[in-house]
Length: 252
Length: 355
Image (cartoon, rainbow over all chains, first blue to last red; front, side, top):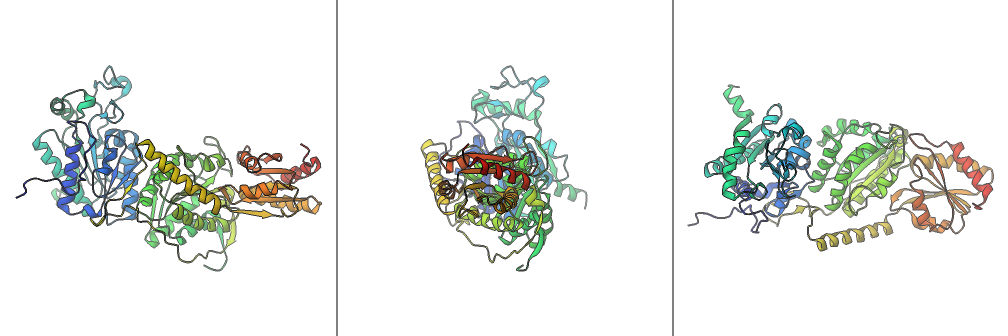
């Protein structure tokens, strides 16, 4: 009896991610959801620029590699052209919350019927650890070597909170993948974000608080602890918007 | 629509795009191409197509990238400052070998410039559409009829060679009204087995991508792309020759400048001056061969442009600098008058190539 196997939607190749990086976990969760919903064959994924740029090699569904930050616009084109296909983007914080802020906000405002998996690890990983729009106040990075000084770098962008102010989006949830309980919740949220699209409900974004041991300069274990100690207090987990649930509760 | 109808250039272009099978349009408001978007906003919902006003030019071109990835005909239109914003997307379209049609209804620049007609995006369109080694097929209409015809042609060339076709028009072409006949038949179908339409778990996944971290691999794709460009130069160059049989002076002009130049040529011919014109219809590929041939008989070329002479170097290269190339231009949204071009022709005739 098989008790554990690689999801079918995940390609049988070795990934380039650093040891202890949580991208692998989130890739697996997305692939499990594609398997469980039986939608691999009708799904098109959009990879970003950043550490997950080569995600197009890791999923077995059709894939597009987008310009930096433009994945929600590319996904909009794909979905408008093929409304019966499932379109998701997989983006990091530099991609989604800095250079691609406009594309993110407006895809949400239009309630574009797409699914976004947003990895927030508070740093630019691929380019070697620069300050991200989500880097915490005081966080030491290559481009904030004395710690992020909010007096001249400003404050982190809280994506779920920001987008929740819009009438457009259907579903926004922040999850984490630093322990078993959180990973299970993350899976549930990701599944819901895809189910919403299948039901035609619209824009669903799951922000996944993740770790970057390499650029944080920590062991993988310490990095997971840092998520609990520093990241989650600043980026509280939970549902920031769920229009369907709100309607049901409101008795509409 | 076989009968002639009176249409604005921008609207004829938009209707031709629909007739060519384009069902997806993404734009962002900018003068003087607004009618294209307005026309699409009216028409697309009625034929099950997409009209979407994007949040920016950048988003619009990336929506184009998405639709093109799925293998559907798609277009965007803008004007000079907006095209600059699309440069990133144009480079990605080239790098991923995606077909698309992009319209530039040019206005004066640089910077915010003005809103009057211009041809000063010549370099940008023919040489520097974005970062990296790539070309776009650049089509320059000189009538409302050509606005429509070259749009259909542009889609076909884009699909055939898997690249961007750009219509390089100007405010005049976009705004003026002329009778047109729109009659194109069924759009040609091209193989798009590379498109990302979902694997149905029945084939290996397709990947639309412009990232190649291995330099030898990236080099290979550049070489392949330039082989294709060579075929285009050989097979797709388009131009019009006007009164060139016995010409001693050759005007080179495209778009509205060519229309103005024609009037001046007729006037000069009436005075016995042997002048003709080569009008490039494709600016890339540039019609080098007819110009080189003309340089055997012609003593002087005159480039009539609404730019500071951006086309001159292409003429000089085409004729291998055998003859002088003079500039007759207006810029900033000003259009050369027939009198100005006529004066330039008369002066050139007096000089007789003794420059």
